[in-house]
Length: 94
View 1 (tube, rainbow, N blue to C red):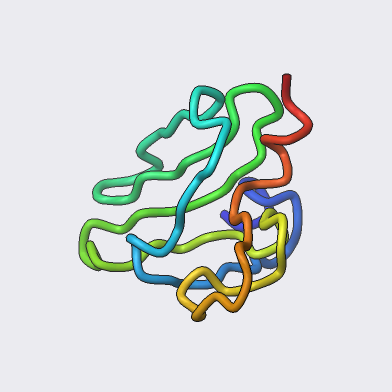
View 2: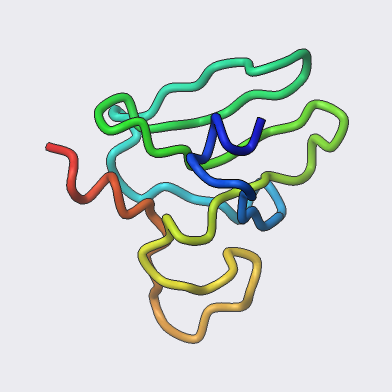
Protein backbone atom coordinates (compact mmCIF):
# COMPACT_ATOMS: atom_id res chain seq x y z
CA UNK A 1 0.00 0.00 0.00
CA UNK A 2 2.81 2.49 0.81
CA UNK A 3 4.24 2.21 -2.71
CA UNK A 4 0.90 3.04 -4.28
CA UNK A 5 0.04 5.95 -1.98
CA UNK A 6 3.49 7.49 -1.52
CA UNK A 7 5.35 6.39 -4.65
CA UNK A 8 8.00 4.78 -2.44
CA UNK A 9 8.64 1.55 -0.58
CA UNK A 10 8.06 3.27 2.78
CA UNK A 11 6.05 6.21 4.05
CA UNK A 12 7.56 8.79 6.38
CA UNK A 13 4.86 9.95 8.77
CA UNK A 14 4.84 11.72 12.12
CA UNK A 15 2.08 12.10 14.70
CA UNK A 16 0.95 15.29 16.43
CA UNK A 17 -2.05 16.28 18.53
CA UNK A 18 -4.85 17.03 16.07
CA UNK A 19 -5.24 20.62 17.35
CA UNK A 20 -1.53 21.31 16.72
CA UNK A 21 -1.69 20.81 12.94
CA UNK A 22 -2.89 24.15 11.57
CA UNK A 23 -3.25 25.29 7.97
CA UNK A 24 -2.72 29.03 7.72
CA UNK A 25 -3.75 29.39 4.09
CA UNK A 26 -4.88 27.34 1.11
CA UNK A 27 -7.59 25.25 2.75
CA UNK A 28 -9.72 25.76 -0.38
CA UNK A 29 -7.20 23.55 -2.20
CA UNK A 30 -7.63 20.65 0.22
CA UNK A 31 -9.92 17.66 -0.06
CA UNK A 32 -10.10 14.28 1.64
CA UNK A 33 -11.02 10.71 0.87
CA UNK A 34 -11.71 7.73 3.06
CA UNK A 35 -9.08 5.16 2.08
CA UNK A 36 -10.52 2.49 4.37
CA UNK A 37 -13.03 2.28 7.20
CA UNK A 38 -12.14 4.94 9.76
CA UNK A 39 -9.14 6.30 7.84
CA UNK A 40 -9.43 9.71 6.16
CA UNK A 41 -6.58 11.11 4.03
CA UNK A 42 -6.24 14.84 3.33
CA UNK A 43 -4.54 15.93 0.11
CA UNK A 44 -4.19 18.83 -2.32
CA UNK A 45 -6.87 18.90 -5.05
CA UNK A 46 -4.41 20.46 -7.50
CA UNK A 47 -1.20 18.45 -7.23
CA UNK A 48 -2.35 15.41 -5.22
CA UNK A 49 0.23 15.91 -2.45
CA UNK A 50 -0.80 13.81 0.54
CA UNK A 51 -0.74 15.81 3.77
CA UNK A 52 -2.46 14.15 6.73
CA UNK A 53 -4.18 10.98 7.83
CA UNK A 54 -6.89 10.88 10.49
CA UNK A 55 -7.64 7.52 12.10
CA UNK A 56 -11.00 7.15 13.86
CA UNK A 57 -9.49 4.83 16.50
CA UNK A 58 -7.08 7.61 17.53
CA UNK A 59 -9.23 10.77 17.31
CA UNK A 60 -6.85 13.00 19.32
CA UNK A 61 -3.91 12.48 16.92
CA UNK A 62 -3.20 13.43 13.31
CA UNK A 63 -0.59 11.66 11.18
CA UNK A 64 1.20 14.02 8.79
CA UNK A 65 3.97 13.96 6.22
CA UNK A 66 6.85 15.97 7.73
CA UNK A 67 8.40 16.79 4.36
CA UNK A 68 5.36 18.90 3.44
CA UNK A 69 5.82 21.37 6.32
CA UNK A 70 7.13 24.80 5.40
CA UNK A 71 9.28 24.70 8.54
CA UNK A 72 10.71 21.45 9.80
CA UNK A 73 9.32 21.94 13.30
CA UNK A 74 6.97 19.45 14.94
CA UNK A 75 3.54 21.13 15.28
CA UNK A 76 3.23 20.23 18.97
CA UNK A 77 6.59 21.77 19.87
CA UNK A 78 6.48 25.07 21.74
CA UNK A 79 7.05 27.97 19.39
CA UNK A 80 9.75 30.50 20.11
CA UNK A 81 8.94 32.54 16.99
CA UNK A 82 5.91 32.83 14.74
CA UNK A 83 6.26 29.71 12.58
CA UNK A 84 4.03 29.00 9.61
CA UNK A 85 2.95 25.36 9.57
CA UNK A 86 1.33 25.06 6.17
CA UNK A 87 2.00 22.54 3.45
CA UNK A 88 4.62 23.34 0.81
CA UNK A 89 2.31 22.34 -2.01
CA UNK A 90 -0.21 24.99 -0.97
CA UNK A 91 2.23 27.79 -1.65
CA UNK A 92 2.86 26.46 -5.15
CA UNK A 93 -0.76 25.81 -6.08
CA UNK A 94 -2.52 28.85 -7.44
